[in-house]
Length: 180
Image 1 (cartoon, rainbow, N blue to C red):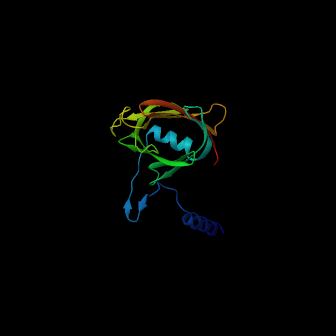
Image 2 (cartoon, rainbow, N blue to C red):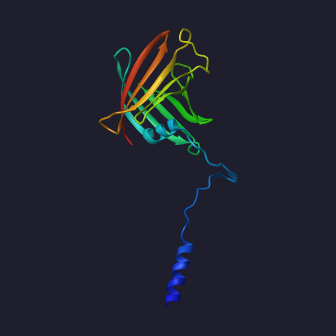
Image 3 (tube, one colour):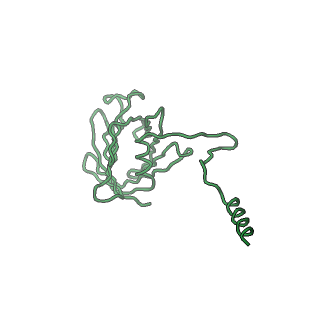
């Protein structure tokens, strides 16, 4: 009887899936492993999902705003779809050589890029990357963005941004809550 129980135990164990390092393939191409920056992980760990709320513009005008952060490209890019007052835009977050690179496709008709300016446990701030060549006196573009977790609610985020419009800086703030 002991032999039969041992035999069935071995068969059962051998038939169970074995947990191991996950293979990462598209077809027969091994995609390998990627290590992400702390800033990428901050966005991934805190922002994935859909968020809705109000954005207060520089003028005091308040508009509807929604942001949807989704992990794509085999977990190597975060795509943010944002809608402000019915106008859709998107932003991508991905690492290059261990640094987070942010590209924003803006309703202002520009495509500014950003680098990490500051990262803490509760916030991340991005500053304009000069690579696209935008100049505040000649182009309308987003200059800086920050995301900060609300201290009173893990499902509320405060977004601040500054944009150049006709050579003048405008500061905006959105308070958004997680929908899912």
